[in-house]
Length: 630
Image (cartoon, rainbow, N blue to C red; front, side, top):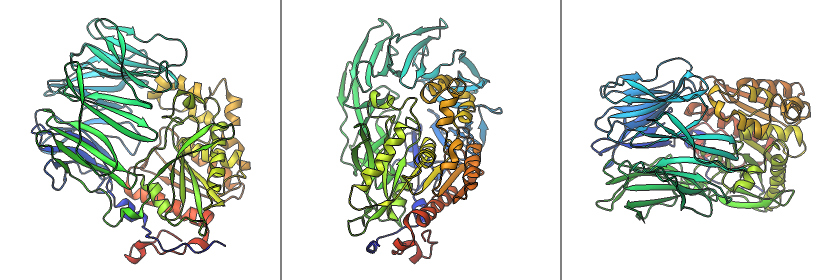
């Protein structure tokens, strides 16, 4: 039996969820306020904050459906926001009048709409909608005063929509051929013609990012001739294309401030986001110097219309997003929010580490690792292999309340970036194609071996956990390698590839073939998909399982979880099942996040950690809050 774990500061899930999640930023016309999204009330709503600091002012008061702010109108205090129903992902675009009246600008049933940006003079804006054809998003031009609209681009060819040039003469279109191969097309609004910009051979990704302020060049990303994506510039007049910006990692986005004075680029650097900002002066670009900030990553950079102010978030492993404003005229930087729960001492949380281990075939597998403070050779701790969604997602550094909660309660967590993950080059990304349930799963098996080698992990108490594709990997691990992990935590994971591939949302039509190419065709590859679907092998599952599902999930439908739970129960294996009636493919309401994470911890404490290791008292118990550990 292990030596007792020394007393550590333990926090309840209620304390973790008292942290406020923030996102988005838009300056008001007078540049004195910032529009943002916050879940301070337990559900996301739109708020404003003074740039000089102060209390947030709520603009929306939804108690049922999460509301996400989009933008102030450029010339007044009207606001755009978006909202779906119960997580069904059929978002509509709404107008919020200054008197608080809400108006749906995209009415209708079963449609999906998205804001696409402002006309440069602020007198019109662009919206995409699939109301004409559920499979494809068209582009509409909206008058900012009357809200009268005009169809600008009728998408009958299944393109993914890109940027619109400032002069409204060009719309960039992206075509996904496979997950490793894509093309860019240009739609000429005047001529109503489409031009293919990137004919090529082999698997190469091209993706249109933005037009320059003069509407003379298109900035695009490609990994042609290299492992990582870099930024190129295409001249709309001459047709010339040249390299513009690169890094030793993937360049993942670039965009201009509204007046074109600044350009911001994001780089995915070994599991962290690194921001580059430049000031554009003719053909020259000068790096923007940002004053000293708290440790962390800068995210979500937004400029005011005059470019005098810049709003951005700072996020770190032990601190969630906090909003800052930098005034270029004075050089001042002001922090506007303090998001971490006042009950939590950030020193009790842990810094992540970037680690790598060799898998069964020698491939290096990068991962983000969280080690509990109390872990030692004398006090060995249980561990969890944490698998991201996707399949081509990535576990990255930054604040993750769920992971910190588990680590705070004594679990080491390895956020594995198995082969097929983004961010580590196109060869690594393509290495999982048509191999799901096999080689990527074997990486997870090797992750257990790596954890067990650390000297302070109890090799007999290692579980696997994940959401979406990570949930699939959890089920696959329990079904196909049942001897490896002691427990599984499946959050809306795929159990039957045949059904999931046949029931993907209609607005995913543009990427259907790419998904089939990576995972398998439900008609042509039925034998392979049956062989790699855990549902058809549930009789092999013999370790405890917990399954969590949103009833309105449009991506992994509820039947995926219903049937795997039923199948495992038939084997008399402990299985717990939680369904949230008001959630979809993510849980956006605090009450549900609290319940889900509490149940996960209780499950892990019961089946993975065991009662003999629970010898520290949660701070929440001392504070009179419910203790979620056993």
